[in-house]
Image 1 (cartoon, helix red, strand yellow):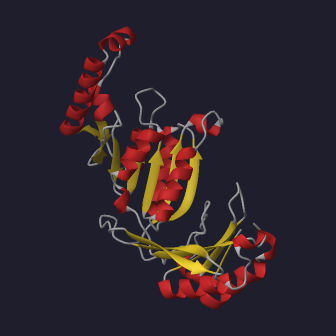
Image 2 (cartoon, rainbow, N blue to C red):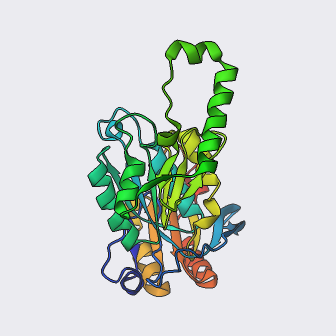
Image 3 (tube, one colour):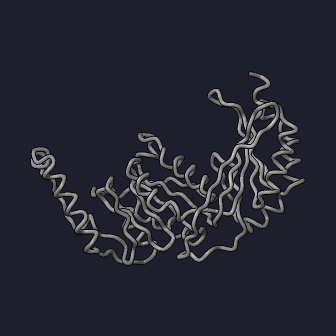
Length: 310
């Protein structure tokens, strides 16, 4: 459940709907930063005391970015693989203050990937694409991203050299396995990236990811994705301040409190029910730390302490 001020949403969206996934996301004003200017992310977290001994976390995160997530893979749509990448990325981006405005899962279809990447690149500050970076025929994400920007593929010598070195190390570490399976590695195909792309290569990944304008392309394997995302994580962020109150009040009884906070303080408010032994919570998000703090204290006074029903 999520509510938000009409004036806030009008200013933030300007006719563009925003989807919040597992977070009460605050959408910033449409003034977009220059895509080549990546702001530093600063995050602080303190504990503020509430009621008879309980606390609520207070988050402050600064910079500007609306982000669309695109996860690629037939196996995701078939239900053969759980889409943990989308959840993990949404959490990472939200914690840095970015607004995850879209989340889309599509098959390994080159034309379809190119269409959505191109559309999202025009509509949002950043697009994060995961999956489809391997060397099998259905791995077409790199080609599709090049298509989205009408770019050719090119082989950067440094990228090719790094892949060759990783292949050499792998062969030396397990020569029997390498010979048994007769690996057919085409270095130029593996190293090919959209023309002018910024390569992303890590110790965890064999195939390179890349950044093309405002599009970040990561591998689909979770371990590789997380290391590669961490290498550019500071390039994501958004002007937002959030605070949460834990409560024993059922979600169905929170409507008046949520509406009241929204109307009085011009903030976005989300409620999250109790689950897996954790209490429910109300999250307040806005752009002014003092306003958010006043709003969360106002909410705190009107909901039951989480400890009161333990």
